[in-house]
Length: 172
Image 1 (tube, rainbow, N blue to C red):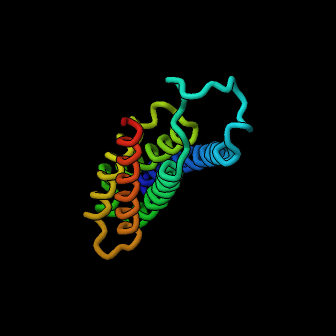
Image 2 (cartoon, helix red, strand yellow; image 1 turned 60 degrees about the vertical axis):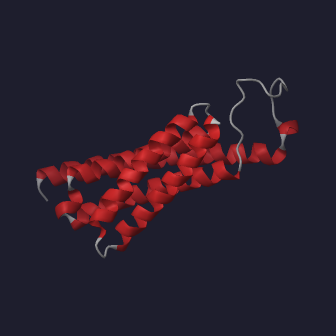
């Protein structure tokens, strides 16, 4: 293993560890948000004010689905980083590796923003959708007969579509 590959692999391992921690925190936030929506407002603490301009977006099935897709896409991109390093050659092109890392990170950020009902989640959804589309295109171009690359491209496309819907729905 040469120094460049060693450094790139080390950076990927560190990024994976940080991403796993962020995903775990996001998962805990979503579980709390899901519990709050199941129990309704009577179990909610707060002033009881309804319909204010600062109300966070409501957690609904579309948002929960988008959060799951973002998490799945994040995990797949992180998994694919290692796979691409193993394959070598054009699969470790810096542009492709950066797209995988960008997609993974933006998926985590977007899932976190939705899970905690951030009023800014529509903006992260828009950016995440763009990163997912670019990652899907890169994976599809490199896929050939590689099933992991094909699956990543498909998952990224689904995640992009879901994030687009969330961004449009939130902006309306």
